[in-house]
Image (cartoon, rainbow, N blue to C red):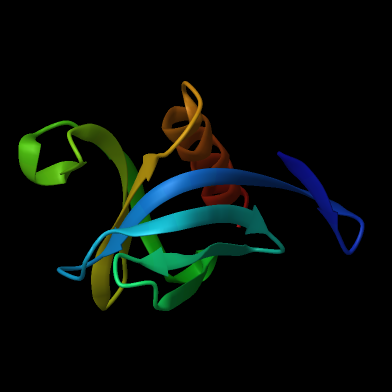
Length: 111
């Protein structure tokens, strides 16, 4: 989904995500205004939110080995400076993880 934030386009995706060793969350990820924002709910229904400025992201890559998958799906690994990585897998749609990886890589190289 494409939305507008303060005049700038933002891409929004339905995803599964995990921060470090925490549980898997179901929700959305958006990239806008120099920040990667994840919001959703964990299995017990508790609301979860994580906002990561691009300046705190060290690298992004697609994970393929079993430890880098969420529910068996390849995930985008967001490596952060001085924080646990975030794993993001698509909840719906085809190619969302690769599209998000491309958007993040472009944003990081422009920052």
